[in-house]
Length: 503
Image (cartoon, rainbow, N blue to C red; front, side, top):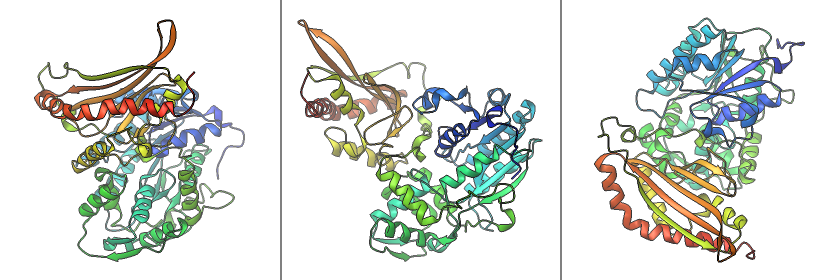
């Protein structure tokens, strides 16, 4: 491998786009551990302020469609990682991806970037989906510029929290008998996230810029059905019954996956469409001559699954597929609403003065959602999640990255942590399908009542409607608020009281 012997990594400045995503978030930490100077480009730095590496990176705020913002982010950069995707942004996502790639390539050229590294998908089969075609076209658009591009193409990435991993894991765990499309017999060459990060980070240390397409795959080629059986065996489950039928189209399959797994239909659709292709690395595109595999070798599929399941069980998931912000519903960003539409704010406010300790209150607040539930009326929350998924939303099944702690940017069922001040406040932003924007916020304050030091905990559900439809929505669901929000606050306090003696 042409890695410089006398050029310390910290002398190179690396840009990581997509740092809030599954691979990008892990890559940043990996690069920092190897003493690279790292800059990340994000739309909103607050979205990554909960990351453990937040204070160790330079941050450039901007939209990938804004040429000047991209050029500014690339100024002074040696190697730029392109990890941007737009598959959730409608049927024309391929056009958006191509435009972003052209924009990035031109900005990199003007900024004097030496190397671009792009992570795409293996696309060697004659029959490939729109998703894989777009991934390949993104690589071509990047390579049309003058900056050399290393395009690494991977298949299924096995790692705790990856979308493909979660999809296969939940299908295997929840369905002892599966009727599946014939594509379950197609071959794939999965690769562990550990090995993906190995190749990506070593690309940043190459002595000279390199251009080319390289397939990266694990040491084994197997069918999707074989991989499901491997999941079952490692999890201690009986062998799954897999019945192949010819009538399940990718569209129907993605609807089924959206129902059974945490992966929403909108994300499952491009993933499933990609499964119609055989995703096997081309030996003529091997990366080994450029970057040798890890000294201990590439991780075997069963070992990669064992490691991912172990980290999931131990609640040590570093990043998840749901870390990236979900796109806004079309009517949430409509420009045709009257000027007054966004000015009305509806709020359901609850508060209570308690003797419960601040620490115990906060512990209960931070544990809300996921497997812990929503402190009462869980059936109504479940029903709202089902309704959301029926209309293409994320629903409740995303759960939590960690059952006990949160960080800014975490997905939490159909919410996302927008702001968090440890021990003081938690603000969640709704990513469910809504005719407007909604927040749920908890705040804990010290108060003095009749000379006694107590705590006040407040709970606010806030809704900013879009147009008349949004206002009608608020009034339609208000009766349910009476059933949900008082009980939520009371049960949260009751949960905190059980954690220990009052001060």
